[in-house]
Structure formats: structure tokens, C-alpha cells
Length: 468
Image 1 (cartoon, rainbow, N blue to C red):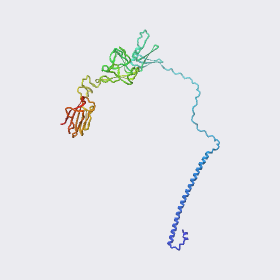
Image 2 (image 1 turned 60 degrees about the vertical axis):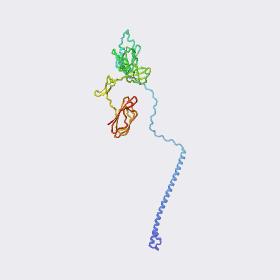
Image 3 (image 1 turned 180 degrees about the horizontal axis):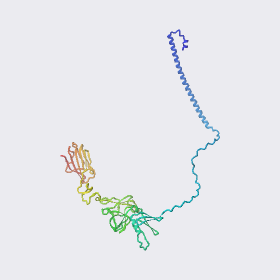
Image 4 (image 1 turned 135 degrees about the horizontal axis):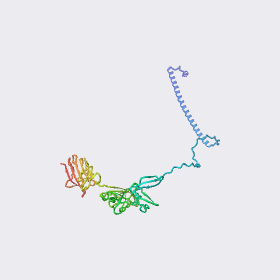
């Protein structure tokens, strides 16, 4: 700045002119420096952009060269090099498959002989139905009873039979009712008892005195006794005498004046049950004595459940028998109504805790009450009296529903809420000597009594009255 002042001729200028000149020069210098800085920045940015472009061009050329080099190198195969030295051994691999079995070794020495075992040498059913087992040691074991008492009695009879046939022992053994299977081989007799007979059946010995054979499957009742044995007769469900003592089903054909067995509970097999299906319930027939029916009997016939069909078959059918007898009303433990007469009913007596016969039973009416409604359909099977206590609208009385019988009664009671209301009656209501009301009397109760007339299937209105 001092150099610029020296070179200028300021002596010819006034002081104010000198100051203005110097100020303009200083301002020009400042602007020049600012412009210089802007040019430097601009030039620097241009240089940086040029360097970046050069770098990008070099990288593109390098990448292109590298790719070309790799492609050519991949096509060049060098000569095989020499084998390298063997590496160290790796860890052991997994265990391989087992090889074939080797040859058998030599036999070992014989062991010490064991003690002799105990075997069953004989088994028989004793005279009292007990199973007796004989061991090889000679010891006998009584297992206990394994057959039904009636079968034990048969076995007792066989084992105590007289040998009056010349001392030759028993000449023959037979099972009259087929409940024991008899097998004879080389003079030895084997008695085989069916499992059903020994474990699931309850049987009773009886005697047939009917004058004819009672065939297998016949349903019988106890009709008496002789020789300390019950006698049986064909049962029939048409009356109490021939059905109340139903005992069971004949187990095998039973000849007249002979003893045999009746199955009370259990299986009877070898039957013709082809007329039924498996699972059919059988009842004592009320029409053919000694037979069954799959149709459940109703009064006046008696209900006696006899059996169920376990297997339906023409020859190999099975019945499971379990007799269940029905009861008369006066046989129930809480009913005391023996020898009733016509018209009597039974009523409960809380003093005796019994249902007792009565000549004049009390039958309380069945009633229903409501404040108001617009429509009423009486149900004769549910109610006898229909009452309204505050009708707030007109009411339509429809024909009753249910199944009325001749003489059934219906009673209607109407009371409005202080304003007369209309009453509309179905045509089934027929006035007899009265006039059916068509409206209520304000604040007054009106009754209408009707009785069912089965002859013309109508409800006859026979009584109408209104509070005074």
C-alpha cells in the first residue's frame, strides 16, 4: 500500500481527494483478494473432479485387464509339479462292519444234573364236584368244587352205582339231560362238563308230571312239588296263576314222570332261534303256553321277561335266560289296595306312607291366571280353569287343543281393568240355554262354564253369570 502511495502523485491533490483515492484503491485490493480466493476454490474443485475421473478410468482399465488376465490364465495349464511329501496321519475313522463269525469253540464241560421236576399224573372230578389233582410225587391236591351242584349229584350217582351186574363194575354211563359229555375209550369213562354249565348257569332240578314230554327250551312255572322236588308246567302270560311263578327254561327234553333241569340264569344252546335276530328280547307268550314272543305284552296280559337271543340260528341258536316277572299293582310294597271295586281309585295317605284305595278321591282343578291377553287357546291336557284379572284389550277365545274325552270341563273367568272389553268365541263353543257374553261388564267378574260333548265334538256352554 505504501508503495502504491509513493508512485502516485498526491501533492497536486487535496487531502479529501487523497482520502477518496486511497479508499477506492483499498477497496479494489480487497475485492481482488476475494476474487482470487473464489478462483482458487473453483480451480481446486476442477482439479479434484479431474483426479476422481482419472482414478475411475484407471480402476475400469485395471478391472478389465484383471478379467482378461484371469480368462487367459484359466486356459493355461502348467506342467504337473512334483508330488509333495506325505502329510501326517489323520484321526481314526469310524468302526467298520463286523466280519464273519469265527469257528465255534470247543464244547464246555457238562453241568451238574438238576433235581427231578414234579408233574401231574392224574386229574379227576370227585363225587362232590371237586377237582382232585395227583402229582408224580404221589401227593393229591383238592382244588375245590368246579361244577354246579346238580352236576356233582350226577357224578356222585355214577361213582356210587351198584355193581350188581356180575361184579363187572359199571357197564355204561350216560347223561340224560345232555349237561355232561360222556366219552368212553378202552373201558375208561371221561366226563366233560361244559364251561357254560359250570361257571355261568344257575339250574334247578325239577320233575315233569304234566303227562307229556317238556321239550328243550320250554318256559315253565312251578306248579307244585313231589318227592321233595318242584313240579313244573308250561307257563302262560294270560293270567297271574300261570305266570307269577315262572321259573326258567327247560335245559334238555324232559320226559313225563322224570326228573330234569331248568335253566334259571344262563345259556341254553342248540336251539332253533331263526325266527329272531341277535339281541332280540323275548317275553312269555300270552297265547301259546311254554313259548316266547318278541312282542311286549300289555294288560290284561302279564309281562314276564324271559331271555335274550345271543345267536340266531336254525340249529345252533343261543338264549341267555334271566326271568324277570312283572308285578300286580296290589303287590307293590307301598300300595294297600287289595280287592278293589268298580270306580275306586288310589290316593296317597301321608299318615301310613301308603297308596290306598278310595271311593271318593279328591281331584284338584288345574288352573292358570294372567292379567291380560289378546288371544287364548285352552289346552285341555294341561289346565281346566283359565282366569284373567285385568283385561286391557279385547280377547279371542280359540278352540281348545289336546285330546278331550266326553264330559271334560272348562271354566273361564274374566275381569277387565275398569273398561269393558270385547270377547270373541270360536264356533266350537255352543250356547245351551245361555248366551255367550260378547263383552265384559266394566269392573265386574264374569264366569263361563263349558262341558265337552263328544257326540258332536263341541264344547257346550251351559253356565254364564256375571257379578251383580
